[in-house]
Length: 359
Figure 1: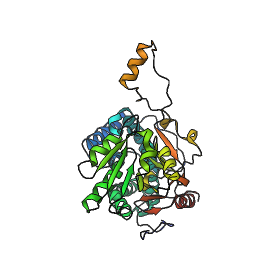
Figure 2: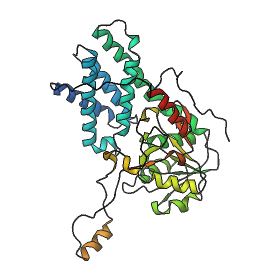
Figure 3: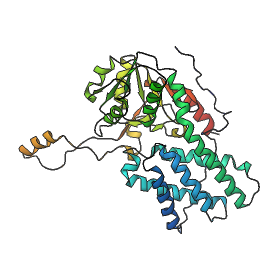
């Protein structure tokens, strides 16, 4: 077992992503300037075109612009102004499936809550109590937060590389930019390993991972129904996450839960890589507790030969399907979570989030 430091405390971090600050709900201001919302979206949409950076990085940059251009005269007005712009940007992202790349908005929501908490927590840095001083403080801390989102992946890959050994086979489910980055940089550091990618229906994202890695390491594809079979040949399982919930479980692409169950039965360690801004205070107990936004994926389509057979048998109309976008993997199926603030056991995530948010 390699030497590593499982984080039990994150209180002394120089830039904590998790804050105990909470917000009082404020009424929405109805006369929001639509032109400013549109301008923020236009700036944001240009940033994410053909970029390898996280969507969160550019979202925070858009927030910085919103803070700069705000004409509000109170902190409450400024935070409400941010809320409305955030809601507008997320809605536009949902309408642009390409921008989210088929993902949910879970990470956007959790990152924004942590971002707001960070701004409020650091208000003591303001040079005065007037609104301009507060805006300048908000802006400076927003830019600092943006810097941290950029270095997350490098901190995470350093932790994850401690668990990648020469000669092992890594099973990967779905496509995650962070998982790809961890594996790609491991190859650059001369690690030698092979990869098994699950197809990950219905969006077949496993082929994206195959495409990204096949020129660098030996990669094999496996259909989702053969996951248990293929896992016998794997040494570890590596997955990403759309959200890390309060009890240390994760919400991720549908099929992650199935993979985790198989890995547990076959005694294969399952490692999660996730930025700390994906930590959320949600506490699902079952699949039915997930947000409505992840319970239905409209992209399901039967293979062409199946549709032809249905037509031949005079079966018309849409096929009734159970096709959720994500599932919940409970903490008992997860070995470790690699984040930018350290390596966590699932129970450590739960303990820290309860301590920090339940003040």
